Length: 384
Figure 1 (cartoon, rainbow, N blue to C red):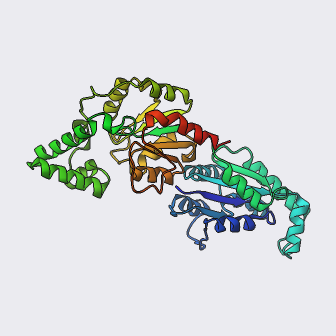
Figure 2: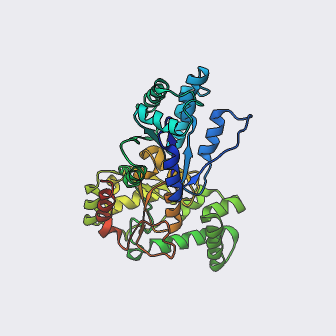
Figure 3: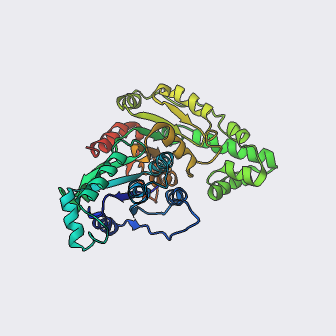
């Protein structure tokens, strides 16, 4: 997912100014028509679930309901459970809340200079109460990233710069397996896989080998993977196809002590996310002597046979191993998969072969076994 920033705080703290700066940087400002048939929870659940295809900024949100509702009508239309669930939804899409704050007198002077103080019934005591409610509400929360920034101590442009430079800590390295963990030129595994996929199709449908290979390629292009095409068009059992296809000869895989040392030198979690089944990857990692370096293998069976170019595997990896996509790095040999990872805020590394589409690629390595530690050091250096 793209960035989703919610600006909150009392009137007069500079939300509109910061929103305009973000819009100038390419963010889209969200505006919504009032719908009397939707509850506050339903409204913001829909807002947070939608993919806008761009970085977005929202000036006020469900957070304001938790502050102004009790002050103005004596209660909030959101329960504490509703509020927590919405924060979790925001976190899942790599969102953050920026709570702008300032000295009460500064806020009052700004509102008064706009001629709004009397209209809004704002005085120093009211402003102080609102500030306190915001801090009490957001300071202890752990469900998502929250930045509390004094806007009377920093210029809006400096705030924007600080937010852009701040990087969440790295928590998880997510690796594709085939042609990423091993170099495609060092083994015949890619050729074996093509042969077994095509042979399965050939024998099942009585086709020539050439026809079977063409059908496999067509389904991969149309559906993101051959297995999805076979399942949708022919009701083939996906597990049967995957288990047959990945019954490969692993004897060519070699141990690489340098690669193992690099993996061991990186303390963050390391996870495999693959379109293969877990048994095949498990055996292959043992052959390479690096099984113990990975805390999890998410095979296509774990994602209900949804291919890696779609979202299921990434969401599973994030849910189980990181606070958000922004805490992850994805390594893959296919730019289409990196594009999906990028949508979740991940850093991306294209491995072992070049592609024409580099739009979602942050780093490139022709040899992951040589460059892994250097790439991670570079990424972690930018966090500081």
